[in-house]
Length: 524
Image (tube, rainbow, N blue to C red):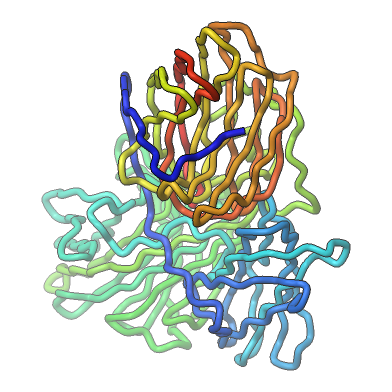
């Protein structure tokens, strides 16, 4: 067993060869459990217990609004269900599994304004309990990005003779100055999507007598952006909206300029929901119109645009803020982690692809760490020595992997991956030893919450042997794969913390744990 000394006197020895890449998106701050109202894009926390087996959260919705819900257990053994209730208490929709232990309700259309509810309870066939995080989302159930236009924004900046796109003072400012010009930019860092919801706050900052701004979907960029393909949804200063398809140099109206049933202003929130061949446009939360077109079905980039008219109305500058993108969950009837990974010796993308296809993970992760090698050497009695990966960076949902080579003069030693480490009293660790044992331990506030240990035949025990360790810590669930075999599955309490590599001596020994091909993906 791993014994943790609260007065840990650790020796740090680090050897790095490689590149560290960090890319984290802003996350919402959870509300206190005592509140029972929901606000879009604000995460709440709750708890299901034997004494309180259901919890109900209410929210206000308007007619035509599209809403989703995402719930992730964060403690206990909770197997949850969400139900969407109308103002009369009638169940409108129930959740389906969306990823390992998470559930979602995706893209439900609200038909009449009122006070709606989300009811959380354990699955009918399980007497489970625990804490959870719940979010009410616009459009789809998985929040891909909530971008307040920070310096590392997903949206491209560029400058051309007649147009520009640049981040300035917390906004993306896009301008155009030419006759009948459409200027646009894309969120290249986000990847490509077909079904997607995009929302942005817009404010016209400069214009003569005409302005136009909008959202791009399914953008297929080429070496020459003048030949790009995309759908554009826009509004203008004449209280109109339109949808057009751009294919190379050709532009075709899907729906030409039409009067909007919703007042269009120079400042407001524009949104679009793409669902198969149907596209619905919103302004300030109200549906403006919808169209159907199947000409461009493939996934593409999302983006923003501005447009001008003819002289003297050929100059427009628009400031964009609060760029939000949600995408559908991968809903399954049931999610069972694979017992064996076929691609366990492959690239991170191959391994993640297998877990995503099994719906263990959502398809939307962020590269966080990639390091060629590191090592920890230990010559002390009964102590754990560690090195940190990415000083000061913390993760909650993650996949963490390394090839581990061990060398020691005795068998009473272990190598380990630590994660969600806050301090010496708050951490989780997966370790495996030369006796052939695999252990999982979690300490919260100095109290041991999980302390599991069992022998496994998946380990190679000989000196200088190399073992591939893969840790999936998602919500309250933990999966551990050793050389491609599922060796442990248990419950943890989710917290956010750092990641470490470690070597542990059960007794006085000289041990060495070498780590190569280290990588981590964040699914926060």
